[in-house]
Image 1: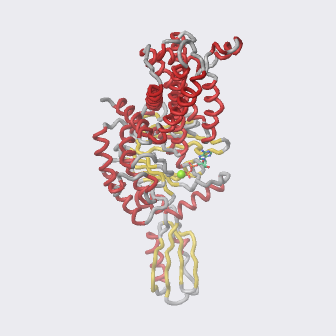
Image 2: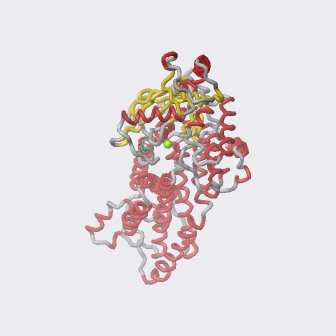
Image 3: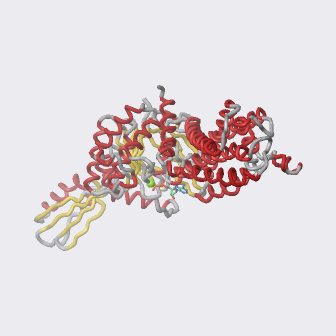
Length: 255
Length: 318
Ligand SMILES: Nc1ncnc2c1ncn2[C@@H]1O[C@H](COP(=O)(O)OP(=O)(O)O)[C@@H](O)[C@H]1O
Ligand SMILES: [Mg+2]
């Protein structure tokens, strides 16, 4: 194995072990939250809600909950690990090594995407416990899964470099991520909104992720899945390029 | 062959503070090089430019011929750094921290594990291998910093105040390890403000003050610039003493206090026999003679005090 691969795998391993060894912090919270979501929204409320786009409400919200869990965990992994590493300066172990900036970013992003994928899968399994769910378009599911976890992992890199304290990260989560998710068509269909609100909603990138993953599971989508995938993949490439540029510049990393 | 470190007109400013103000320095391969300077002189900034933790504002810096920015990967791979401030991954036991660090430098996993054991044994904390850094005692933390710097078998080992707050015994152990490495060919760059440490260990030292190199020389050469005291105890209080300064221009001052005569001179060891013979010629009986050699510390304090007069003094806590 060459030196670059060894270095990449070492950082990837560190980042993956970091969350695998603390399942109570990484896997238990989404587990509990999603059991609650499925019970309350799916079972208790879902009974009184009509089918949406021809699927029962509990099935309709499942892909959205998967997306929510996957992206917030991917985002948290990079943003927290990079911020915490800066805060306690141990990120210097990485920065003073001969890893290229691309390799550093690649390992951080991939590890976070893996965490997002694990949590997403976990949520799908919880959903399968409450209702019968199949995967109608597996390739789309995988493709959207990869792209959205990578996108939020790479956005997390920017956040982790930008934040000056923990409150900054909390703020991003509360004031940006959460509203986008809740207005992103996780819990309702776009068709239920007035025409103008629908148009505005289409500016929310979350709509495309939720619908893409919904297409993967259920084979139904309110927007064109191919176009969504292309745009999201393009966006991910842009953010990763930005990450590498920020590392090269030493933004938030060197004085 | 290129020197271990080659620096030309290196500059770093933090707003109005010139942390490095045009540093020129060459550290030869294989040397044990000391970077001395009071707090805030710019030592840590200098080191951090080499490993990429500080972006230089100007000038050139090369490590074994590799530019620290253009060829950052080669430059960083040749350096092992034990920094002044602890910066260790606190989520993993120290053995794994070492394995990860080795991995980042491209060392395969099996070899990395072996190396980790080796260096932990070498610095004497092998039995703590499964402990996390936070739970180590202060001395063990310093040992670990050295172990982590050694894990990648660097050609250039940089130690930034490695013995700060360390007890005498550990200090001597660390010195022994470092001297041993140097004898096997590793270039050492040591910063310290314990001057005695540099005097004992270094082949060559650079004196840094307010971001400028005041001087580069061997510790001996620097000490020759200071003045020694030749202290002579006479049996009887003399009425007059010979005019030593007229006979030897290395003599800077003469003081008589009762029966004790103090002749202050450069290279006191060489001046002493002359002092004795002149006194003897004049019929004074000598009961005791002592040469108080200047310390590097005194020379250092003198040099950096002059430096402070030149530049505006900076107040610094680091
Ligand atoms: N991050 C920083 N921001 C502003 N000033 C700094 C920073 N780091 C160091 N300095 C200043 O640069 C000068 C050199 O500091 P440093 O390199 O730590 O000195 P030394 O290691 O010799 O004690 C000091 O005046 C210090 O206050
Ligand atoms: Mg310092």
